[in-house]
Amino acid sequence: MTSHATRVLVLNSGSSSVKYQLLDMRDGARLAAGLVERIGEASSRLVHTPLAGPDAATAGKKRERTEPIADHAAALEAVAAELARDGLGLDSPELAAIGHRVVHGGLRFSEPTVVDDEVLAEIERLVPVAPLHNPANLTGIRTAQALRPDLPQVAVFDTAFHTTMPEHAARYAIDVATADAHRIRRYGFHGTSHAYVSRRTAELLGKDPSEVNVIVLHLGNGASASAVEGGRCVDTSMGLTPLEGLVMGTRSGDIDPAVTFHLKRVAGMSVDEIDELLNKKSGLVGLCGDNDMREIRRRVDEGDPAARLAFDIYIHRLRKYIGAYSAVLGRVDAVVFTAGVGENAAPVREAAVAGLETLGLAVDAGLNAVRSDEPRVISPADSRVVVAVVPTDEELEIAQQTFALVGDVRTPIA
Image 1: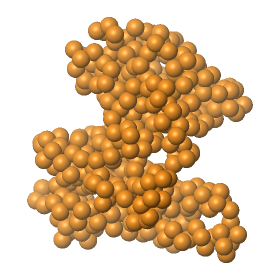
Image 2: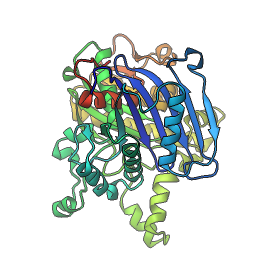
Image 3: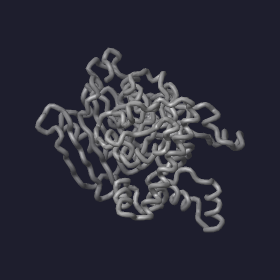
Image 4: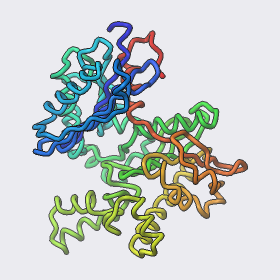
């Protein structure tokens, strides 16, 4: 690899979409970003935004096109063409690697990994525990390999950060032989976000990550909590799949497992129907018909009882996890909110810590109301535990991990 290969393309391949960002790892600058959605449909849509490049006049000017894009191969070819228009083509010698978000890495993958046939086979073996995500991730990797077979493809796993959990936190209390035979245990997800945010929180406190205990609340349409002790995850709310834990946009989160038996026996629902109910028709949308927290808060302010109940259930679950992870950690230095809801919904942050003064938690109303893209403390100066908002950056985390693995060691990472 030449010394000037400092760019990383980050790909997040879904079942019918591809999100991407191109970053320069000399300073972490974003050169381009975009999304291809509705892949396989007649109305496929590509939105591309150049953020830097040879033509400064085009920077920040979004380009959008709607046309049939048959598959992921066609999608990535379209992305490559858009990047080439900006002088940022995939054939550039400045491109060091392509980093792929892979949702499930099981126990084997605790670090970013250069993809080879054996790695692909293992990701495929994990499809039964991530049937919605790993197949799409595999498609993205294979498509990128076909486009640039000479370039390192790096898998960065959502589960990797959580592999440090002790067995007493990761194991479910079921028959050990059955659990081992079918890989049933707590894996956790959103790991790149939890890793990035916990590290940035330590920086905000002016400390090394090894000195800080943090509860991270990643609150988006998907939501998860983690207990991070000295930079290492010791517990997290999602489990074998991303269904467990907090109330989410469309997922139920924690539920008595016997509910599934009840629905099959009494309601006559199939396994697939129950899966659809719990993953896509539950959570906030199941409670009140909306999964957008902004809309729910508007309805709460107008006195809508269904929205009020949905909000209260959401907050109750959050508070339970804050309390539980305070007990797990013993000493908490910071509780930090991140992702779309966590970063932008001040009422959620206020309600989540209200009444938890005995745990050292409080928010300053003025600080909490401030909107900013920067990490910030929102608790009073004299609080025993810092409450903070730290915007997540999963793409930068994936790019940094990718470049650290394959990049030129003479080029510093931002």
